[in-house]
Image 1 (cartoon, rainbow, N blue to C red):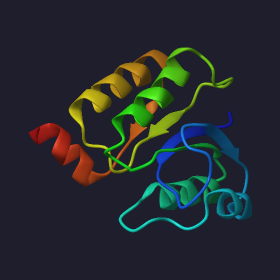
Image 2: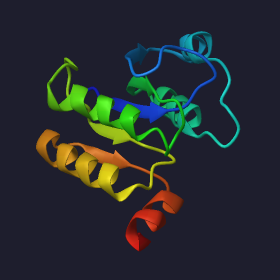
Image 3: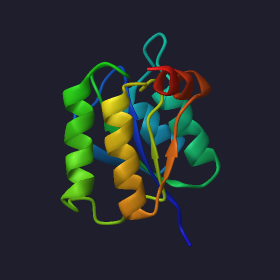
Image 4: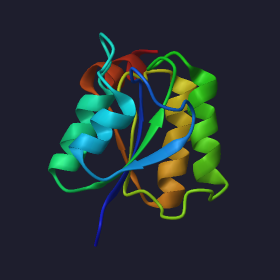
Length: 127
């Protein structure tokens, strides 16, 4: 079974709010450039590729704050515009309860995992 990670993240360049498949590290670097300060999305993307997972990178303007960008990505998943269902949805930097709740529901429907950080989980639980 091949695993697919749908990852929301910030990047230096690349098309916003568009699901872009990445197959290797050089492609990731060419398409998205360097990670902005405080961003974690590209680091998670590197890990996914190093563990030989398929990756769809969904570039958001600002990790954790561009709520409309996250909603667009979730709508793509909900409306089945992504051909393959992801094994996991990764949202580093997102601690907003509304987005996490909506993503959790989506994960339940798709039988996917939600990948986040300890800090984001703490923000969600204490919100």
